[in-house]
Amino acid sequence: MIARNASAGFRMWMPTMPMTLLSARNATESSPAMATFRVLPRMTKHEVKEYLSKIYKLPVTKVNTQNHEGKRKKIIGKRTVAYFKQADWKKAFVTFDADIKDLGVTF
Image 1 (tube, one colour):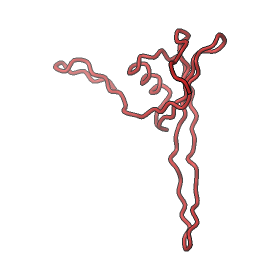
Image 2 (cartoon, helix red, strand yellow):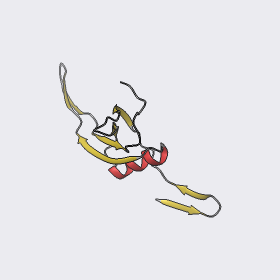
Image 3 (cartoon, helix red, strand yellow):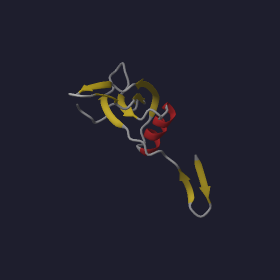
Image 4 (cartoon, helix red, strand yellow):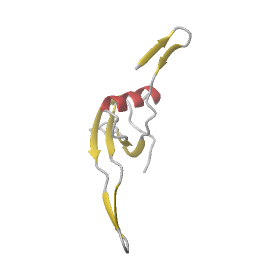
């Protein structure tokens, strides 16, 4: 969503959605640099690419996603049994441009 206002100039709306870095892999001769993020289930591939491109100025070429359901747990007490489910989440695999060789992250 883009809003234009004559007094405020050009403003762009970006979602405030958390992205957690799970893993990163530097580029080799045969494969480009890749990173894996944990994102909210409602984020799309396009939103992940725009978020990294516009906020962090990273050249993203491709984004793949996987949906993960939260684990279901059962806690057995003395008198009752309680069931609960952890939150659903999404994993985003981001491939960067060939210009980036080193991501600067070590695990």
